[in-house]
View 1 (cartoon, rainbow, N blue to C red):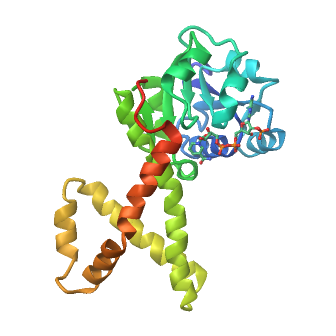
View 2 (view 1 turned 60 degrees about the horizontal axis):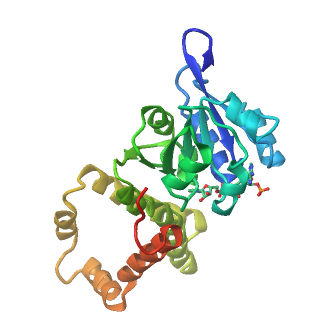
Length: 271
Ligand SMILES: NC(=O)c1ccc[n+]([C@@H]2O[C@H](COP(=O)([O-])OP(=O)(O)OC[C@H]3O[C@@H](n4cnc5c(N)ncnc54)[C@H](OP(=O)(O)O)[C@@H]3O)[C@@H](O)[C@H]2O)c1
């Protein structure tokens, strides 16, 4: 850690300066509260264009190479794509006790721990784009105070003590991605019938955001909420019955099953 004596600056080193890294730097900077600079970013230079952009817009620093990222960081965030993990990490030397946050989807805690030993590993799933706005959740395993303090800058944090639960919860990353396709599909229904694109986008997004807010406030009351909004024989029942009859809702669960298999294989692995 470094700093001015009043507010210590935590240096977050990022290996894999791509899209997710960009969302994280933007979100953490946007949520800055203490001197605007309580987290400092040190970036891998491999994607030179992206790293230069983040340096220019958010004051992140560029490291000479990946080892310089590890050496200069208090927390190291891994954000390479899954097939790049082993090749990118195996030659690096981490410090004992150093905290490594892995955002690499589908690579187990045990596998990352082996690659970065003797560092301590936290696996995290972030939705990505929403983290840039400071409203994207983080799912992490195991609970770890320093990692949680950093991730809290990007939105709500949900820590897990057991790996199988983390694996299941992490599929929310896929749900997040698919929800943009869902939004686009719904918006296009309105634009195809003559609404202007901005109005269509806003009424769909505001409807879902409002309803999500209701569920967030009353998470145990979903059945009562549905009973309260669904008039017998009314419009919602008409649509909900058609979706159920055609399997439209079950298709979403099938997609979650497929994304879980894609990330983790058939069954949850032991961490
Ligand atoms: N994007 C999201 O919203 C999101 C959300 C949740 C989780 N994730 C996870 O985050 C990770 C990154 O995803 P992304 O979408 O940000 O991918 P991305 O845009 O492709 O970023 C990955 C970056 O890592 C770089 N890289 C590859 N090998 C490297 C190495 N050895 N050393 C340093 N940098 C290296 C890549 O450079 P090259 O292009 O030159 O290979 C690329 O710039 C993935 O594991 C993904 O599962 C992403």
